[in-house]
Length: 140
Length: 283
Image (cartoon, rainbow over all chains, first blue to last red; front, side):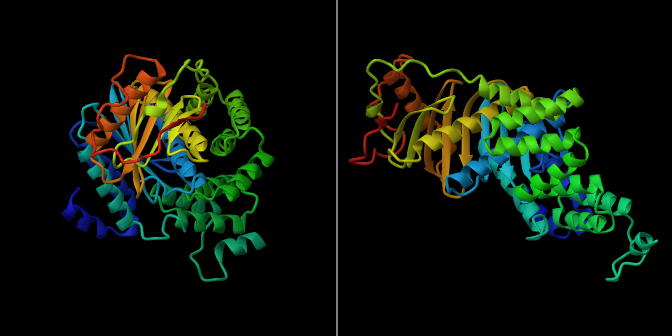
């Protein structure tokens, strides 16, 4: 997900955005050390997901959306800027979360994954979404 | 006949569209994250059939997706006014209640949803989270002679919060009026993250990094104690984690929870701010 891919993304027309968003999730899933990825709307609706079969998608999506909203509403209450990325590290892996115009990008990764690599990929993915969804497109 | 005419010959020259077609297209747009377009299609459906329950539910979802909570609540209530057992509307309102810190309402709505539809994974997951919050470990007895005032921020540090998993504030630096609110917010976030990590089968939460355009907040927890350090966003993650680890050890040492390294251990980042205000114990 570097410069050339961004250029390609800008060529997408609105009708192919569904495929585009699935491509973004697949790109994230293919990164080294990544077990799965999804994009979930703030209402908990799963836009696209590539998760291991052992993970129940709807439950995780519901909690990931709740987590994203919690980070947003907490920031609003305290008069702070909203979060851009977050990571939560546990014994058996790390969950990354990034805020985008259309929802939250979630990556599940190995515990020893490169934090910088995943954060960079998430930043690229958010930039792709920002480029493909013009201001006002998602939020109206 | 009037309704049919409005269906097939819209006055503004728009493409004729039936309600099912409009809603099907709206669902597709929603699936692509095109919320504004989806909202316009739902509005068209409601122009034709103002009492369409599916359209009102979709409108509610789209309001939430666009972070417009008040109209979303109205739409969810409308749906429940016409179908009091609508599990999706109950879940939608429960999620909003959770955001609004109304745990009791959230709990009641989820219980109602699960009574009608016991196999409802999203509602179960959220109810599990609500129960986990209610079961947060009680505040431990205060150590006899806490010395957390000896803790010092690293040179680039902006704020330090030491709190408990139930949201209670133990100490902060600097001492500010909103430190208690920050401690509660950090604890809530970690509770939700813990539930999500459990669902992803990743195990118990130990560390977190939350970034906004100004700061990167590095947090360490063991499920009872929380140490949260705000550093500039540009801080290298390894460096930030080293700093929060140092403060974690020092906090445990001062609270008598473990034989951690001394609080006066050197900072991992450039020299401590000269004359920095000492951390004050709050409770």
